[in-house]
Length: 380
Ligand SMILES: Nc1ncnc2c1ncn2[C@@H]1O[C@H](COP(=O)(O)OP(=O)(O)O)[C@@H](O)[C@H]1O
Ligand SMILES: [Mg+2]
Image 1: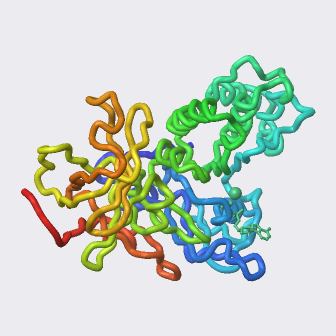
Image 2: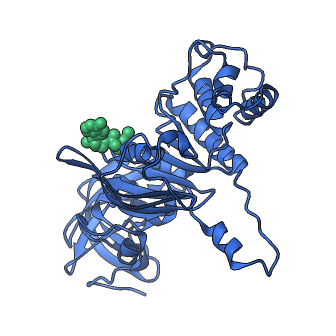
Image 3: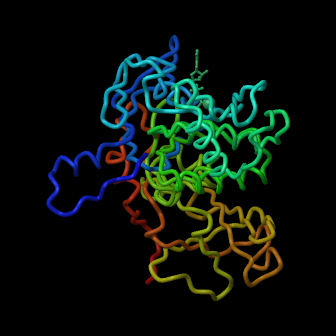
């Protein structure tokens, strides 16, 4: 599964091209339910071996996307390719994908081992091979020795691992995961996030992971697409999407957003990039400086959050790590005025909502990558 042949120099261009065939390619994908466009024109390529996440609020069309890829829904229009083959009109069983659902969907009357073996049995893989592959899959998900148990005799986290083993044992080209950690408590979730990432690296299968949890998406993904109302708002690496949100929606959905307007241009800046200036303190070179009135000071333990109203207009949240000062509010209390600075190259111009625009990476990247030039007092 999945291992790329890096042939010696001189191998034909065909081999090179084959290596480049994306695991999943979607073009112009649309699916409506009555008046509602659940998937509203999606173009996407996911390369082989990538951990790709679809992130978006409830109702943004993530599950519908996965169901289209798996073949449980038929698109109204558009094309779905898996490893270069058009599967748009193919039934689910002839697509080389497996799905892991939030509710695990294990067979309660079967043992763990029988559950994991199930897909291989359907495909008439001989018994001995079935056994050894199922046991290997249980080892990968760190559940060796539990094959004899029934699902009810397992914890939630263990059941999730069985569901995963049951999918990876089939060695699909693509594994679709629909909020697979949603039923777990916060601590277990975090553990499983790292586990899933490890497993994905180990087996090399392309993962398409769906979540509404931005932290999860940032932690786990090689790249992610932010969805809203059936469209991709932004596509990029976690760093790109967090540091350079391309639209209002992305800025607001991922992390705390500061959206400001200066000289007719709108831009975002992340709270931890804002420098609050104690009396006599100088901002970093190349900073834009304004005065801000402190509206609120919130002590968070490792950091303190300041809510500010800027003299130039607009509200701002700034976060300052409590590395030096143990006491919140050492910089000033509510009602006081303070110098507020940010580096120009950390402010990113954003577009407004992009309804109807072709939301491809190429389309959205330039706006997000262009630092903003402010009017106003400059330094450095
Ligand atoms: N079978 C269906 N019939 C009617 N509406 C549906 C159906 N499936 C999904 N929808 C609607 O499509 C939109 C997207 O749903 P879904 O893909 O489940 O979003 P998500 O997984 O992001 O929460 C929602 O408004 C939902 O109500
Ligand atoms: Mg869903």
